[in-house]
Image 1 (cartoon, rainbow, N blue to C red):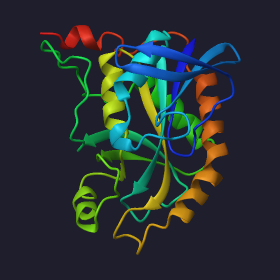
Image 2 (image 1 turned 90 degrees about the horizontal axis):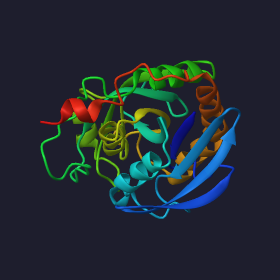
Image 3 (image 1 turned 90 degrees about the vertical axis):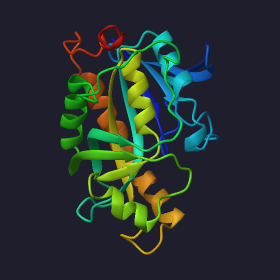
Amino acid sequence: MRIGIIGGTGIYTYEGNMVSVDTAYGSVEVVHAVQGDHTVFFVPRHGAGHVLPPHRVNHRANLQALADCHVDRVIGITTVGSLREDIAPGTLFVPADFVDFTVSRPTFFDRGAVHVDMSQPFCPEVRQAVLAAARARGEVAEGVYACTSGPRFETPAEVALLRRFAHVVGMTLAPEATLARERGLCYASLSVVSNLAAGLQEVLPAEEIAAIYDRMRPVAMDVLEETIASLPRERACGCRGAFERGAL
């Protein structure tokens, strides 16, 4: 099985051989590795060395590169701020849905009418594997991810609005999940809660957020490894045919 991993803030590297994959949307550095019976292709979402801020991430190139590597499933790792006091920093969060507030809408279908179905935003098979692996590691929350453009954090007033219908807030999930569906890839995400959002704590100190990254990095990697090992070999979901169903 060929599995793609997109690493975010706090998870920049993966053991393996780096190759450059050229796509119509740009070149992407991909780490190629073997994990048990599986082949893993790791993409650092923000580029090698974390050089791209959230609003400059080339999501189309990242997903196209994984598609060109012929992966079947993709797991996206993100860090998020909590919109709820009962979802504390250091919690693992598995999104069940998302709301997209980003202003640039990258798509693979700039021409022609293609409307992919997002009634089930994440692949049920991959999401269930992520959820089970995360639960084996400790406290896990589920819910709605609100996606903003960044790169700034949200204001207290924005957080007050977002918390009416979402549980966490981040800057990268929505374009990624949508593009994966457009390419017929099975996608789900694992998020690490790094902080409480603005207004729920007095300030957002960078050193405290970085400390959460450092503490949770090995936990997230363990969840990844267990998820990969537990994924069913045959895809029984409908993600692969999403494009055909959405074309008008």
